[in-house]
Figure 1 (cartoon, one colour):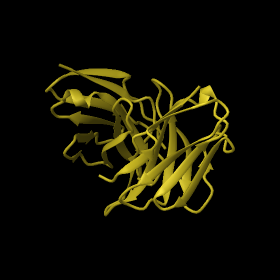
Figure 2: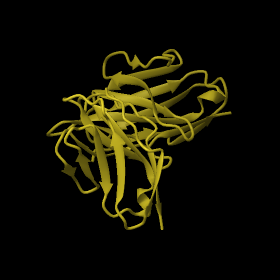
Figure 3: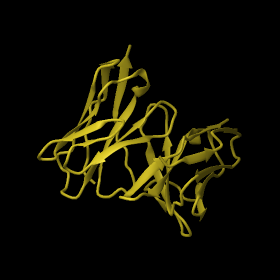
Length: 117
Length: 110
């Protein structure tokens, strides 16, 4: 299947700093990507839809000024957690829509584990 | 999108078939049934999807009831590597965002 990568795979940052997470579609172009977060022993929660060349669409309750999303190219979307706090520590996962012969399908990245100290 | 309900957890003996049920009684005629799984600390993985016919691929089989109100994902010969959380999702198109429920935690036991 199609490959989606994330960088970094894990990151530790200090409270108050900002951290950027990259999501790349390695062998296809993705006009739409999604960002999720997952707390321990919980399911994935959709944060936002990232569309290439336009503003992201955030889910209800997600602070757009805190979680900045940029989808500047067809293969890269970035999520920046601004002024991170310990409660932002989570597993962040992206997915990208891959246009295949029969339909579109979503492929997920391996996730980025963020720890804020 | 229609809501789905799945058992919280299941066990399966290694080498045996794992049958994971999903109820989606409010599914609409144009909604597909999708299955994903997430192995611990990894991103979700697409398994299979279908509309009304049974589907099979190299990973699993999907059996959808005639009234489409429920389905079963079958892993024919479960291995320890199939231990994961399995998510059943209903959505209209594969372009729609995936909204995850709690899923079923499958434990394959030696």
